[in-house]
Every structure is written in structure tokens, then in C-alpha cells.
Length: 455
Ligand SMILES: Cc1cc2nc3c(=O)[nH]c(=O)nc-3n(C[C@H](O)[C@H](O)[C@H](O)COP(=O)(O)OP(=O)(O)OC[C@H]3O[C@@H](n4cnc5c(N)ncnc54)[C@H](O)[C@@H]3O)c2cc1C
Image 1 (cartoon, rainbow, N blue to C red):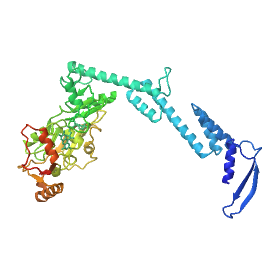
Image 2: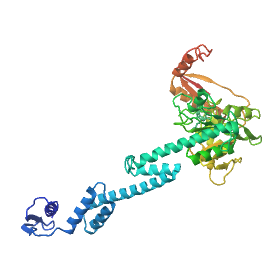
Image 3: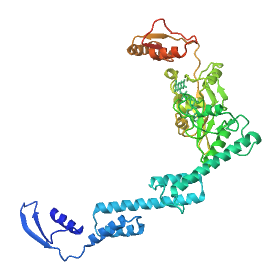
Image 4: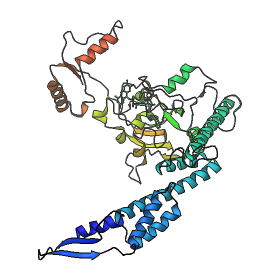
């Protein structure tokens, strides 16, 4: 039967084949073979399967493919039991074309309306529908995707320009879009390049954006106004705290607006019975700690960048720091927060209740979200009592094994009094000594050791 099918296929393909087919049939059950079984095909009319196959092949071979013809060919092919692989290919091509057609219609409508958001979405859809930049050209030969991209660029520039004009006007005349006092907005017109660079470049100098508008709102309402405007105009925004993050997340990639929280730096309330503080997101960690020290409390977080990083940035990065060992992560200590979503909506989850077991844990979503879900504007934090005394021990260790033993022994003997353990190797000490040469920084011990641990 297999041989017969192959011969029939050859005939359907129009290839030369014997008019008198001679095949050997082997019955799988009896294993008896019948020789000289023959069939005469010389005067047979073309089968419906053959005709439908040819029709479908022809429709698929056309450039450009005629959608209506392909649709008819597929209908016929289904009825005539055409080869399933060919049918499947035909259906795939048909679906692809339908998707392309829908994407082009959407893009054309978006181009007519010139709404930035719709245009961006329509371009994305067109690209996933595999519409090339030069496909569906206009009279000048420019493809529809290329045309749409050019319009997006124009509209973005216009929106940015409008914002810049209004900001500058705002500085001088309190214009209606966003009104910032002098000094609270940095634009090339108002400031020097170094000031712009401070917000555009990360702490390590590894990443540098080229934002021309740095906004420094002073209240949740102002943050909301900026985000609402940016959302309407489809302008990208990067929230920024102290800009001490080391992974490039706090600086623009291109020319996004930089929303600096540094002016939102007030401690709003402290409950001296519970130690729960309500603080604005732009408050610098060290300043918050100094404020709390006056009331015998402390922030349950301490890290190298404390003099510059902000509590909002700490929450946005779920920073760990030195006190983690004793006081745990910010996830456990942040009781609530207020945030502004990308469209300007304010989410108030500013609970100051330690045992709050109502509803969803929204604050947890924002902790560690690095500005992707919204801008954190205020936080309530549970602060521990400040210890009356602090003792530091510094150990030299012969190898890493001993560093680990030091840690285990400190934990066993000091229990929860132990608040921090840090270690470093000799290379780190040498690096600091070299870098700080001439500043009075000296080797901590007389002899050198491979490792050091501090508790
Ligand atoms: C010397 C040094 C030591 C450091 N030590 C530690 C350490 O021990 N442990 C540790 O975990 N990290 C450490 N860091 C990293 C950094 O300090 C922390 O990640 C810090 O929490 C970032 O705070 P920031 O205010 O500077 O945030 P930024 O650097 O300004 O921003 C960091 C990210 O958070 C977003 N963001 C900032 N503010 C907000 C907001 N209000 N709402 C929403 N998103 C926001 C930004 O868009 C960005 O994605 C250190 C950094 C330096 C330079």
C-alpha cells in the first residue's frame, strides 16, 4: 500500500510514472504476497484532492498573497482532504495575514488620531505581527511602521518641549501645568551642566543618562501632578532618592524625567511609646537616625551610603545593611507606606499599626520594587530602642574557616545582643590603605593577617 501511495503521489505531482502500476501487496496478517496486482490509471480525470492541492499551492505562491483567494483555497482543501501538512501551512499563513491586516488597521487609526499611547501600542503590535519597517508604504515609499515611529518621536519631543517651557515659565511666572519654586527644578536653561550631571550619572560613574528636566517635588500632590502629566504625555520618569544605588536603576537610560525625592525630607510624626515613625521618602537615612537618636530610638537599618541614601530609596531597593542580623529586613519593619502610581493616583497604605492583619499587604509590593510600580512618598517604620552601649570587637583570622567560627561563637555567646558581623580580607585592607594614603588611615593591627572580622 505504501508503494501504491508513493506511485499515486508521483502521478499527482505530474511526474513520469508507469501507466500500468505493478505493486506487491503484503498482508501483515497472513504474510502472503500477491504479485502482479495492477491498476490502469491512464484515462482517470484529475481527482478533487489534486485540484484542491493545486489551488492551495497556487494561492500560497502568489506575492502578495490574495487573502480572499487563500480563504477559498483553504475551504476547498478542507473538503477535499488535502495533505494535512500543506493545509496546516496554509492556515498558518492565513492567520498571520489576518493578524497583520488587523495590526495595520490599528496603526492607521492611531496615526490618524496621533495619540501617543495608542501609537506606541499599535507599533508594538505591528512589530509582533512581523510587519517590516518598509511594508505597507505610502505614496512616498515610507513603510507604515517607520511613519508611525517618526510621528511618535515628533510627539514626544513636542510634549517634552511643552513641559520644559511650562517648567521654565513655572519658575518665573507660576504657569499652570506644574508650579515649582525657583531652584526646585533643574533644566539646562536654569542650571549648569554639573548640576544636571549629578542627577544623570550614578555613584560609580558607570551609567549616564541625558535628562534635561530634573523635578524636585515637595509634596505627594506635586509627585502626583508630575506623574499624571507624564502619563498623559507618555513621558518616561525615573524616581531618584540619594542616587547611591550601584546598579544604574536611579539614573535615566535616555532622556527620562528625573523625579528627585530629596525635598520630601520631613519626619512627620514619631510615636514615642511604640517607636513608630512616619517619614517622607526623601529623608536621608542618617538624618532620620539622628532625629530618632534624640528620642532614644534608631532606624533598624544602617549602611555605608547612610549620609546620602534616602529612606524611600532604601525601601525601594529593600536594602539590607549592617543591622540586618539583629533587626531583620525592611519588609518586617516597614508597617505602611504611601505611594503614587504611574497615572498620578495616590495609594494610601500608611498604617501605623504593628499588628495590622487586614486586607492585602500592599506595602510589601512596593518594598524592593525599585520604582517600577510607583513612587513611594511616605513610610511608617517600626524603630527599635537605641542600645545604651555599643561594644565593637575586631579579630584577626588565619583563614576563612576561622572567620566562620568567629561568627558562630559570637552568636552563641552574645545571642540577640549581637547586632552586626562584618568581615574582609587582606586585599581589601591593602586597597583602602593605598587609596587613603596620607590621610592618617593606618593598618588596624601591627601584623598582617589573611582575614579580619568585626562584631
Ligand atoms: C558606599 C555604598 C555602600 C552601600 N552599602 C549598601 C549596603 O550595605 N546594603 C545595601 O543593601 N545597599 C547598599 N548600597 C546601595 C544603596 O545605597 C542602597 O541601594 C540604597 O538603599 C539606595 O537608596 P537611594 O536613596 O540612594 O536610592 P537611589 O539610588 O536613588 O535609587 C535606587 C532605586 O530605587 C528607586 N527609588 C528611589 N527612591 C524611590 C522612591 N521614593 N520611590 C520609588 N522608587 C524609588 C530608583 O528609581 C532606583 O531604581 C550602598 C551604596 C553605596 C554607594
